Length: 114
Image (tube, rainbow, N blue to C red; front, side, top):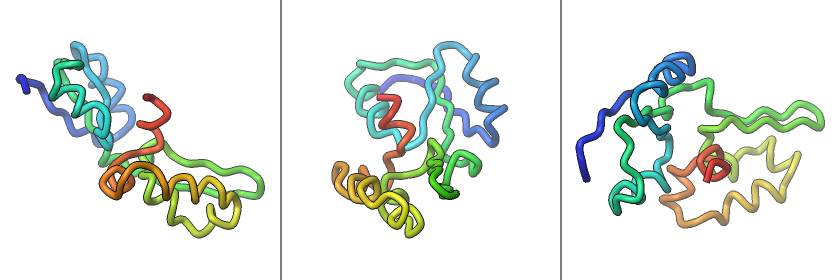
């Protein structure tokens, strides 16, 4: 790999500000970005880590509305009891994504972004 500046954002506002730095890329699970960097298909100047921003994680079920925040892992989607009752097919699908490493690190936001 090559030199890259790593930033651990503490809030969404901080992440947005850091994203303006050079050729920054967002990082959460890293299931796509890290392999792309290893093979030099991606070469960002900066990585902005979102994985420690709590407001980007979680699942909310309110009536017929389901909200899954971007940094929620596939494992969390697959194992959430409220989601299993509200939309069992979505929870089942998340339980079949990739292998356990992908399910525990990969995020819904990352899958949608890629």
